Image (cartoon, rainbow, N blue to C red; front, side):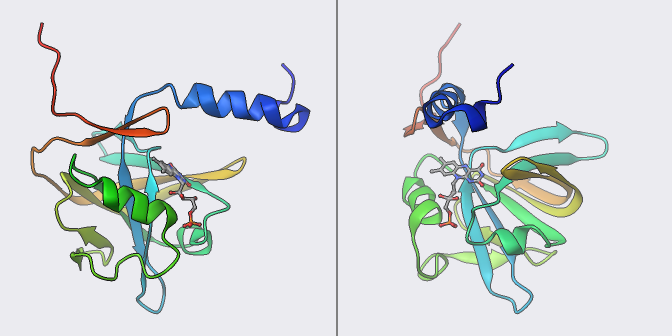
Length: 169
Ligand SMILES: Cc1cc2nc3c(=O)[nH]c(=O)nc-3n(C[C@H](O)[C@H](O)[C@H](O)COP(=O)(O)O)c2cc1C
């Protein structure tokens, strides 16, 4: 098969669009700098990996402004956004200032930021980090987690949606 990345930007765009046809939830992945500053970015690459041991993964883009933190951190948290948290998704994807200023959050047992109102969170230590093209696959071992049982925020073809409606059999 041809090397898509090197062959043409339009092929990459079509690949991005094909990836976008997969319906996902939305998370904010967080960590702390060595000096204690909270950092975070919006991510939909979250995947559950294993129950025993309890593992999850997230893909971290090498172009992220906080990549130098996520490429070395020993801990991180994944906050699954609720259906009312679209503004947080936008903020952690785009805002250039202090993304934690004015929002409610606290530090987890392992020291990573947990956002108030998320429908679930996972407090992780890094289990493995795999170099994968323009991303790293970050596998986390879950130290602690919480599930509020609320509806999550969905994402499909570059748009957010609410998961409040169920298709009944
Ligand atoms: C819905 C959504 C999902 C995203 N998923 C990921 C992801 O899984 N991994 C990633 O590195 N960036 C992802 N991004 C991009 C980052 O959130 C961010 O916008 C971009 O990397 C620029 O971040 P920076 O301003 O922190 O550098 C996603 C953005 C959106 C809006």
